Length: 259
Ligand SMILES: C=C(O[C@@H]1C=C(C(=O)O)C=C[C@H]1O)C(=O)O
Image (tube, rainbow, N blue to C red; front, top):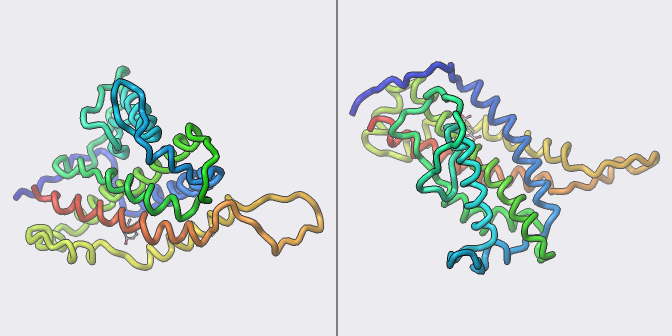
C-alpha cells in the first residue's frame, strides 16, 4: 500500500466536476429524445446476422465496433473521460494528440463497466422509454443508440474523477474502508442524497424544457403539453440506472486507489 499523490496540472474540485455532470445532462437528455423517434427495433441489437468475415454480431454491435475503431484512430480514447465498449487493443491515434493531464490514479484509471452498461441499456433502460415495435430503420437506430451509450458511459465513468476528488479531500476517511474492501462503507461515504435528489429534479425539468412539442398557434391550450419523452421517466432513468452506475464506478475506483 502506498499513498501516491497524483501529479495533476488541473485543479479538480467537486464543484467543477458537478458542473461538468450538469452539462452532460443536456447531452444525455437530448440523446434520449432523439432515440425516442424510433421504436425499439430490437432486431438491430438482438440478431446475430453479420455477414462480414465470419463475425457473429448484431448490427448495432458491428456498428459500434467499427465506429470505436475509427474514433480511436483520431484519439478519442486518449481522453481519460472516454471509455470504449469493445476495444481490448485500442488502435493508436494516427494523428498527434493532445497530452491530457493525469488527474486519475494510474492503477485505478482503467475501471470500465461498459459491458454492464451495454446489457442494462438494451435489456432495461431502452425498453423503458421507447415505443415497442419495428420500423426497420436499423442504421439510424444504431447511430442513436451509440449517441446515448457514449453520453451515458461518459457520465457514469466520470465517477472516477468524482472518487479521486472525494478521496484526495479526505484520504483518512476512505483508507480504512479501502483496506478492508468494505464496499458498503465506501458507498455510504461517497453518497450525498441531497445532490442526487437535485439531479433527478433537474433532469426532469430539462426533459420538460427540451422535449416539449412547440406550438405557434395562438389560443392553444398551454396546459395541454406533450413531451417527446415522459419527463418523469428521465428522472427515473437517472434514479434507477445512471446514478447507481456512477456510484459503482466510484466504488470500483476507490477499491484500487491504494494499490
Ligand atoms: C457524483 C457524485 O457522487 C454521488 C453520485 C451522484 C450522481 O451520480 O449524481 C450524486 C451524489 C453522490 O451521491 C457527487 O457527489 O456529485
